[in-house]
Amino acid sequence: MTALRSALASRYALWLLLSLPAFYFLASYFRGGIWPGDMLHPTGEMSARLIVFALALTPLSMLLSRPRWIQWLIARRRAFGVAAFGYAFLHLLFYIADMETVENMLAEIGALGIWTGWAAFALMLPLALTSNQASMRALKSGWKKLQRLAYPAALATLVHWMYVHDNKAAALLHFLPLAALELYRIGRLLRGRSLRGQI
Image 1 (tube, rainbow, N blue to C red):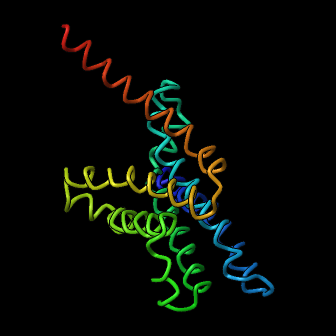
Image 2 (image 1 turned 180 degrees about the vertical axis):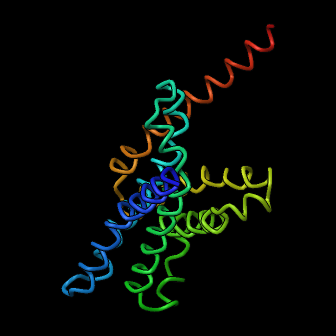
């Protein structure tokens, strides 16, 4: 019973921590004096950082020989993914408020920095909707396959960030460490298969 209470307290504390920036963004906006467009970058950046963090956990655990603190984070990785979607949704709401009309949104949807943002959101949506135990049980092995959409979602997010703000340096600074970790993970998996083939 004590372990269950500790786990619940840990989960709620994590969700509170992940929600704090959202409370700050919304409070700042509703206090007045801030345009919806001013909230696009911080909400989008928060979503991107959480995507990078969630995806980096597995290769980072391989690199660091699975320390306990990373195992704790990996056990709660779905929370980071859902939070990333939550900030992407908040980003979308501020975008809609900033654009004001559907016509304005359609007028720029063909731009690389715009449609990749919509693509990233569309890819993240099924991940967020199925990030629960019931979906895991229902989808079985298909659940892990579905979760692989996180990788094209991250790539679309990177392109969106690079071109919508015309700030390639900041976007690459966030995503290059993830790319390096993923290359390490792939290399390690390939070496493992090679060694097994030699036995």
